[in-house]
Length: 392
Image (cartoon, rainbow, N blue to C red; front, side):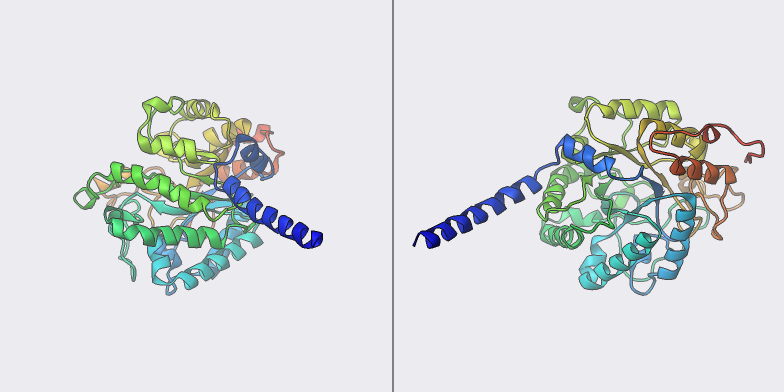
């Protein structure tokens, strides 16, 4: 009888312990846990990635256009540069169309990335460019226009509360399916969630978009946490604000900074501004990763920002890897004046030409030097312009 009672007691204790453990898993990571996680990673360096033959995340992932051979080739180039991560955009409509097929293709991508020593950061939602995404064949690039085919997710679907159960299932299934996958670095739950869209899509943008996102974003964090991912959650702040003072920020930014396990941010600015942004975010006591930077003609370059980030131990993911159908070698203002007659004097984004050769060899050398050096060490060569440095 005593043995039976003891067994029952142990079973009850085990039953009660599971919810307690899960409760801990569904809370925001402590600063200590976040720092321990970051210390266990290589210094994160990579690009926002879409293969050269895809105009957007739909074309990258759809069964008819998913191109593992091209991805393998390009991630091999990334490996040779010393990169160890890529920020990669997913989409809820891809999951809605074919959940198992989509997850299988994600697994194939992660296998390829792992073979090249790359742990991607996966992005669940995005608020930039076209708010009315449509599956199927994507239109060809608009001549002379930056990111002319990129799509939002969920886009206009966020205006319909009846869609929220579908979005919840998407988040839980995708994050849950890869929650313990060591090939995944982190989850970026929503890219620039309160971005007004950009381009010429104003008339098609959701009304009261910021208010809608402010209500939905905390739910997305909760959905993702509910499946207990071993990887951190984040969403990057991007406005030109003083990020050190939560009282001065909008509801979306406050959620980003108070719900993220690790802090991420965007900075397409000169290094002086980049340094100030890092200083503003340091007070939150969490690891920092800049998930978008490098717009050459705006003052953000590999040469002037990556060595500074290495010194500050800030992870760095630049926009654009290989020149291709996204046309992000063109600047943002190409939406107002397409570069159809004359290309820009300087590439805006992207590191490599479509054949894998660097746009500037100096940039490739800097990335390689910095990623090969021990953490926190900035080689002198990475700080010195080479004698043969190209100018454009």
